[in-house]
Amino acid sequence: MPADKLTATFAALADPTRRAILGQLAKGQSTVTELASPFKMTLPAISKHLKVLEKAGLIERGRDAQWRPCRLKAKPLEEAASWIDQYRQFWEESFDRLDAYLQEIQRQEAETPAAPSPAAPAFTRSEPTDDRPQ
Amino acid sequence: MPADKLTATFAALADPTRRAILGQLAKGQSTVTELASPFKMTLPAISKHLKVLEKAGLIERGRDAQWRPCRLKAKPLEEAASWIDQYRQFWEESFDRLDAYLQEIQRQEAETPAAPSPAAPAFTRSEPTDDRPQ
DNA sequence: GTTGTATTTTACCAATGAGTTATTTAACCA
DNA sequence: TGGTTAAATAACTCATTGGTAAAATACAAC
Image 1: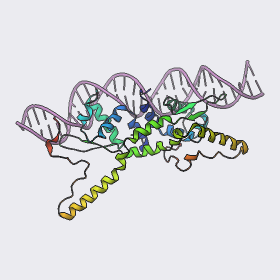
Image 2 (image 1 turned 120 degrees about the vertical axis):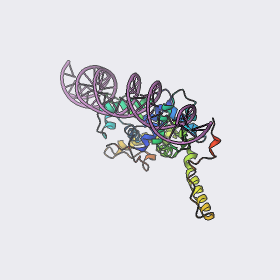
Image 3 (image 1 turned 90 degrees about the horizontal axis):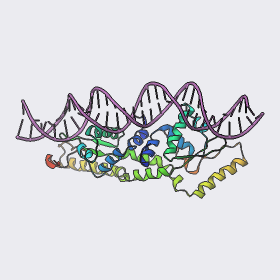
Image 4 (image 1 turned 30 degrees about the vertical axis):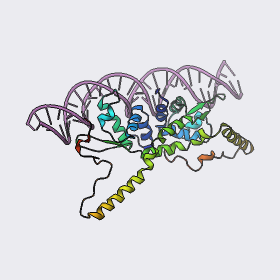
């Protein structure tokens, strides 16, 4: 029930049981009892997890007689991946280069204290479009 | 307090305020009041969010007199990104599958124009009823 | 020292989340 | 019909979360 899609996606992924379910569905579609079998918890608990995943758009449920086959719909993960990808430089970039950037900022601010700092290199064009502060 | 790191990371990201804070920190380190200023919530609320981010390893907090400067530590995002990346093919192939499906429909309709279109591949039974494990 | 500023901590609250058992719905089979 | 299986729903418990206001802590400046 989170308003924005990204929040719903991350919240759905913030549970090891649900991530394991997605991992199982990556191998192919599966029924609820099949998905539940590896876990110690009861079937209604799995049913709840599936509902969370469905509301986040991560799975789709069909109907086959009394079975409710679940299928993976990884599309929301694309948005999550591209959000995270904005920060890729922060773990890929060498420490020296980040340090050099910060020192450059400090140098520029020492030169022209009234001027606003430039944005970080990789964050100028792809600002997050959602979750802006009120 | 989630046991595994991936759960803590996704849980920390499942909040628009926290994601916005990370977005702000991507531009450079910042103090708590600076980070809080765009939001209408109180300072202790921001302090709690920062604690969540810190426990997830997404930020580091230093000390500068009475200020507690926060810095982005995007390393946990690398693990999150690589987990999500397992599913990349599932969203990259979706267009191909849809295209293949549409072409198949056109082919069948060209053969037997009066016949009803089959259901989308997603939820059709792959085999008649007795292919279920028992 | 006292005062002021930055931040955290301490209760406290309402809402949500994850789990349970028990019941209900839906579909098949005999 | 009735019986069985698959799955969802209902109703409940308990822990966690996100927010608040108020008090406490840490430091700087006077």
